[in-house]
Amino acid sequence: MLARPFRLTRGTDYRSVVRRGVRCGGARVVTSVLTTGEAREPRFGFIISKQVGTAVIRNTVRRRLKAVCASAITDVPEGTDVVIRALPASATATFADLEADVTRCLARLRRERTTT
Image (tube, rainbow, N blue to C red; front, side, top):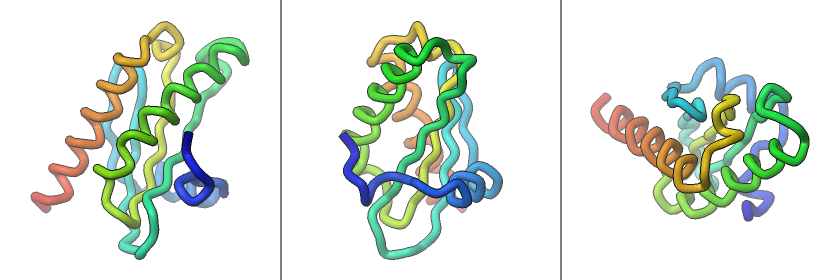
């Protein structure tokens, strides 16, 4: 589970990451990453709309994504904000599928950041 310092909680933070961040899309999730350069822990936020499914399904997807991000905290540089938007296909995805999508996007965005 993600502790409080690792979570995005304000709407303005979500908006800035989605609007100004680098985006990586997949079949099940869209990941946006924004490096702020601040000396703090990486923060994660999740957007799971009603299009994904019922409340039970949305909460299951959110819990799975939180677990994936909790294991990826060490791979994300400090001062980075990550917003993961679940697409309707995530409702039927397994934990391994979601983990593969998120880690692929984080690795790709990390590679792009080091080359620029």
